[in-house]
Amino acid sequence: MEFPEDLKYTKEHEWVLIEGGTATVGITDYAQDQLGDIVFVELPAVGDKVSKEDAFGVVESVKAVSDIYAPLSGKVIEVNDDLPDDPEMLNEDPYGDGWIIRIELTDPEEIEDLMTSAEYEQYVAEEKE
Amino acid sequence: MAKRTPLYAAHRALGARLVEFGGWEMPVQYTSIIEEHHAVRRQAGLFDVSHMGEIELRGPHALAACQQLTVNDVGRLRDGQAQYSLLCLPSGGVVDDIIVYRLAADRLLLCVNAANTDTDVAWVREHAGGAEVVDRSAEFAQLALQGPLATAILRRLTTVALDDVAAFACREGEVAGCRTLLARTGYTGEDGWEIYCAPADAPGLWAALLDAGTPSGLRPVGLGARDTLRLERALPLYGHELTERTTPLEAGLGWVVRFAKGAFIGREALLRQRDAGVPRRLIGVVARDGIPRQGYRIVQAGKPVGEVTSGTKSPTLGKAIGLGYVAATLGAPGTALNIEIRGRLVDAEVVPLPFYRRAS
Image 1 (cartoon, chains in turn brown, purple):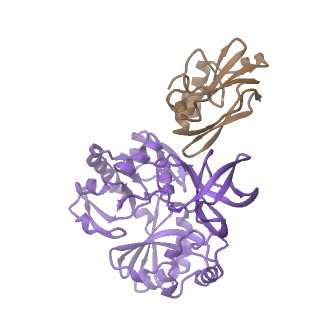
Image 2: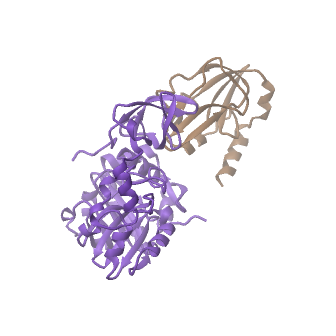
Image 3: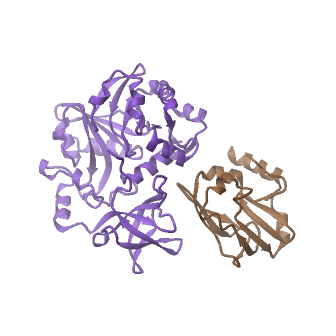
């Protein structure tokens, strides 16, 4: 199970890569492992506004439907258009080709609420128990 | 607390993800639902289905009781034969879908769904007339070996003449030194076997089957793939396609209901429905841009016309498939419908069932 140190994390198992005023968002290695084979994704459109902790998209495994939550508030400036045709990239490369959206942040102070890699690893260890 | 099968430790050792199902802690997958699904379609899969319940009707009144309790005609069975059947309410609604094994004229074994076992035992006791009713669920573990290579793998471990056992027949015999009841039945749409054994023998039998079959591509398969496999073959699942509020005729199971055999519970209501015509019926749909799921509305021309009962992305077909009930007039293959998915209307088309049938 990977927990890259340059990323921030949420309790809903999203990861965030902060670069200046933008954030790239995906689901974590743990999340994809828990979901199992992902077969469908529903993404927002470029230009949509997202609010911290609100659902902005959906991933479906063979068995179940799960919401994806925005880790931070902002405007969607890019979506991973390859995912609808290749949803299995969320399983195969969750921190790379499986990225989901890029957001232009409206409230960068929200970053303070995210977990570090070490904190998230601890959080996952506790959830597993 | 959820019950555990005798194979619980084996599942843990294999790294299975366990979930609660029907009051049991069961493996939903070992590695990947899709990979496990393909293994069953292409080679073979081994399932722990020890959670299933077993109820035996015994004594001189066993056959008569079974005729009264079930909609299929037990009179057609000889010793060592089995049939798919249903327990119905007087309303025609379904109490459970079951397999009836005729072990002998005075011994009929009913294999029932795990989640319904307690309900079924009570229902059967209440309507068994003079037959003795024994809940044997705790006496049996059950393994399902399914797939095109299932018979070849099983042959390595038994001297039973497997080719003499037809589909829906059963035979007592030893497998890997364990006493079993071998039934050529399953819930995947492939050739295969359901192997009943003593709980104490189950771990050894499980290991022997995996050892014998792994070189041929056999792998352990969880309930996740069991669901996608049965759904592709359009086999109903209780709580989804079958409930106390659906009848066998609506579910497309008219072939199971043998009115000619005489009295049985639910006969009058089902006869009335047969003569009046069913108000709704089970259909299969393929959806274009979204996955149908249980409870989603089926819509035509903006009006709700029914509801999805099961759905998934079919690993074999690569398409989003669903089963559901619609008004009987709308069920013709080729009919264009919509599925309402998270407030969005997705295009779908009625297709013939099953979605998948193995080449014979």
